[in-house]
Length: 137
Image 1: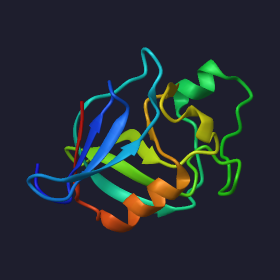
Image 2: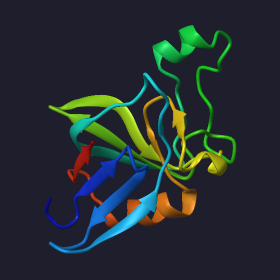
Image 3: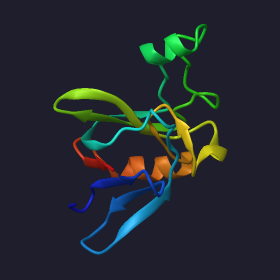
Image 4: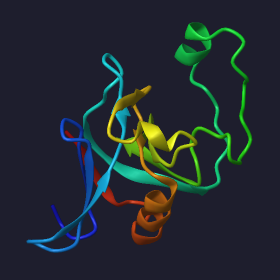
């Protein structure tokens, strides 16, 4: 992978920001629960600071009464930053994002997204651009 690319190792629960041919920055992550994991190639299609969270249609079916939107803030599941993953010009609905539940890092906890500590996703957000390649394996 070229410098600047992001590699997500779901089995070991680490995200790597490639720095050079021989070095990478490693971050701890939470990954999708059984049945909710995603893998493949994507790219950062959009970035957001303190994003609002909108549950997917599947989440609405699984959790009747879930709010249609949670505004930015400490209780927002996306945390401080979000990187929206796209593939073939389409939103995958998978995000690399912060979390309001930092105790979940290192576990299978999400509905498919990649969770990071807020301080780590703030750092990653500053280092990647829209168009950055991402591999989730």
